[in-house]
Length: 138
Image (cartoon, rainbow, N blue to C red; front, side, top):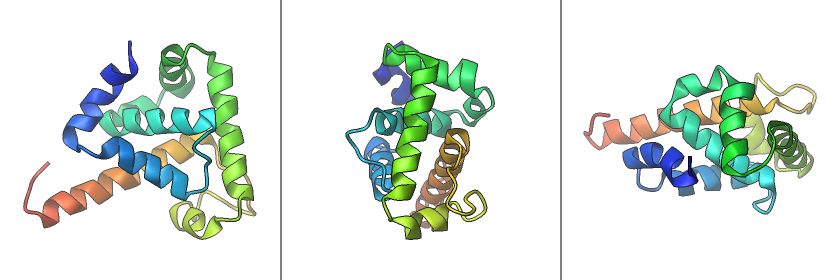
């Protein structure tokens, strides 16, 4: 397994998908230098290409990311949680609140699984909307 193999399917449907995902994660306040940023980027890319991948997070999605980055599943999950905590504490909560209205209460940390699911679905909806307005079908 390689990073390019996992992201090729998702990138095929939209040339700038990786850049769009990275921009979105960055705008939400997750610093780009954190490992959690890279893990989220790959996870969202994988779930965008295969929505069913979110069902089996620990033994499926996180294991896949851990294998690609030669780390453990617990490190992947911990780094994602840390990245989310930093995003929430960064003060950029307007966009965060817009995306996670129901998922975030009292500034608590949203679970990484939910973060991935919501962003991949929102991204999918936005790209379908753009394609529809351009007259293309998916």
